[in-house]
Image (cartoon, each protein chain N blue to C red):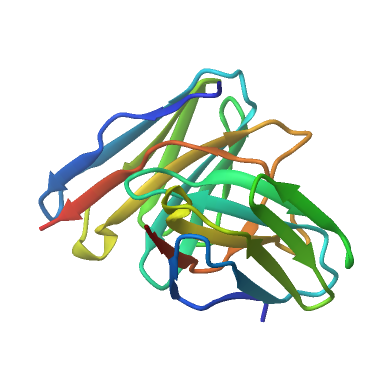
Length: 113
Length: 111
């Protein structure tokens, strides 16, 4: 079974803090994704990585950055957290041959106060 | 504008009561439509891929169909375990990895 794990299920941070969300997959997948999920808006892609150190911006990259130093690990960084970044953050992975069959982690519910 | 709209937003069924969820899309040149299931507190789980109008896929009590403008997820005689949010997504035009997601249908099946 593919397993995608995320470092925290729940996180509460203060405005202005630097926040790190980590994602690890154990299936040697090349592709990794970070999404945020908000009620009524669906899942929106923040960043995508197709290989170590390679990344592409998604639809809503503003206020976020990412790091992929190892194939199995993909980190999302909020440089200076703001209240409008309160959301559910989901990490996913997939293989290049089936980029849309994505395996998701359980999510991190981040609250910024 | 490329868009995916799912209806209804929420659906309550009695156990055994069959129904359908709708996913309508407006994208130029559909190259793939995907259904996911999301249980509360969990990430989405991939269910089906559909590529062309007329295509159908089945898995247990679920059947997904595709026309030129919409897809249906038919749920036959559901059990309470089918309760979840069902997400529809389409491949974004011009991208080899981006999906455009709908906001989902929350399904509750009562025993």
